[in-house]
Length: 77
Image (cartoon, rainbow, N blue to C red; front, side, top):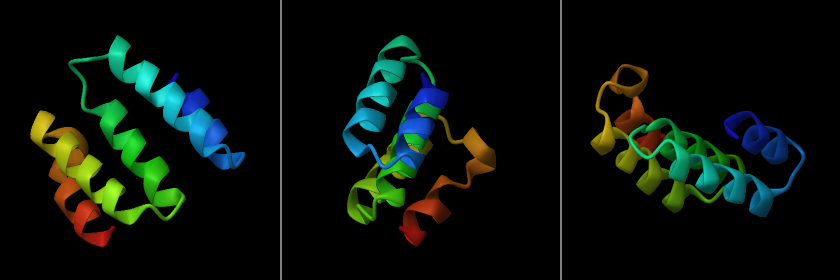
């Protein structure tokens, strides 16, 4: 589901990517990765405020995700 979401993002399908990653979030409820991926999709489509919020949510869910890099990515957004 994560790979499908990224493929849809690269194909320009924002709604499809979000839907795939929201499904992924339901299946992997304990993981911060779906939130991180959703943040990247929002960033790709220049929805920076939503991207920043999602990066922060991913960090709160698991501060170790990507070595704790999400706050920097949120600030970049």
